[in-house]
Image (cartoon, rainbow, N blue to C red; front, side, top):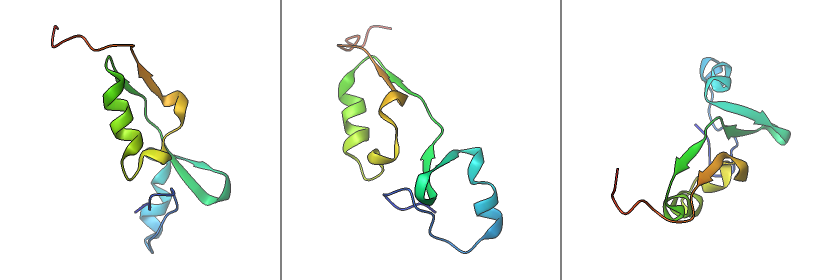
Length: 73
Protein backbone atom coordinates (compact mmCIF):
# COMPACT_ATOMS: atom_id res chain seq x y z
CA UNK A 1 0.00 0.00 0.00
CA UNK A 2 0.86 3.66 0.14
CA UNK A 3 2.11 5.58 3.11
CA UNK A 4 1.02 9.12 3.97
CA UNK A 5 3.67 10.58 1.65
CA UNK A 6 2.46 8.61 -1.38
CA UNK A 7 5.37 6.18 -1.45
CA UNK A 8 4.58 2.54 -2.24
CA UNK A 9 5.49 0.13 0.56
CA UNK A 10 5.13 -3.45 -0.49
CA UNK A 11 6.63 -6.40 -2.30
CA UNK A 12 3.89 -7.37 -4.73
CA UNK A 13 4.88 -6.81 -8.35
CA UNK A 14 1.25 -7.28 -9.42
CA UNK A 15 0.04 -4.63 -6.98
CA UNK A 16 2.69 -2.19 -8.16
CA UNK A 17 1.84 -2.95 -11.79
CA UNK A 18 -1.81 -2.02 -11.19
CA UNK A 19 -1.12 1.23 -9.30
CA UNK A 20 -1.84 3.29 -12.43
CA UNK A 21 -5.52 2.29 -12.24
CA UNK A 22 -6.15 4.54 -9.24
CA UNK A 23 -2.94 6.59 -8.97
CA UNK A 24 -0.67 8.69 -11.17
CA UNK A 25 3.04 8.40 -10.57
CA UNK A 26 4.58 11.76 -9.68
CA UNK A 27 8.23 12.67 -9.28
CA UNK A 28 10.34 10.73 -6.83
CA UNK A 29 8.32 7.48 -7.11
CA UNK A 30 5.39 9.06 -5.29
CA UNK A 31 1.80 8.31 -6.23
CA UNK A 32 -1.09 10.78 -6.41
CA UNK A 33 -4.74 9.62 -6.36
CA UNK A 34 -6.64 9.92 -9.63
CA UNK A 35 -9.69 11.52 -8.05
CA UNK A 36 -11.92 14.58 -8.12
CA UNK A 37 -13.57 15.40 -4.81
CA UNK A 38 -16.78 17.44 -5.15
CA UNK A 39 -18.96 18.88 -2.39
CA UNK A 40 -20.96 22.05 -1.79
CA UNK A 41 -19.53 22.46 1.69
CA UNK A 42 -15.83 23.36 2.03
CA UNK A 43 -15.67 21.83 5.53
CA UNK A 44 -15.74 18.29 4.20
CA UNK A 45 -12.79 19.03 1.93
CA UNK A 46 -10.90 20.50 4.88
CA UNK A 47 -11.50 17.25 6.77
CA UNK A 48 -10.03 15.22 3.89
CA UNK A 49 -6.99 17.52 3.66
CA UNK A 50 -6.42 17.28 7.42
CA UNK A 51 -6.64 13.47 7.37
CA UNK A 52 -3.68 11.08 7.22
CA UNK A 53 -3.75 10.92 3.40
CA UNK A 54 -4.82 14.51 2.73
CA UNK A 55 -1.45 15.57 1.38
CA UNK A 56 -1.63 12.96 -1.37
CA UNK A 57 -4.35 14.91 -3.22
CA UNK A 58 -3.52 17.77 -5.55
CA UNK A 59 -5.24 21.04 -4.58
CA UNK A 60 -6.90 21.35 -8.00
CA UNK A 61 -8.69 18.03 -7.40
CA UNK A 62 -10.92 19.67 -4.77
CA UNK A 63 -14.10 21.30 -6.12
CA UNK A 64 -16.36 22.93 -3.55
CA UNK A 65 -18.82 25.76 -3.06
CA UNK A 66 -18.65 28.65 -0.64
CA UNK A 67 -21.39 27.27 1.61
CA UNK A 68 -23.35 24.08 2.01
CA UNK A 69 -26.85 23.38 0.73
CA UNK A 70 -28.28 23.16 4.24
CA UNK A 71 -29.47 19.59 3.65
CA UNK A 72 -31.62 20.80 0.74
CA UNK A 73 -31.37 18.43 -2.19
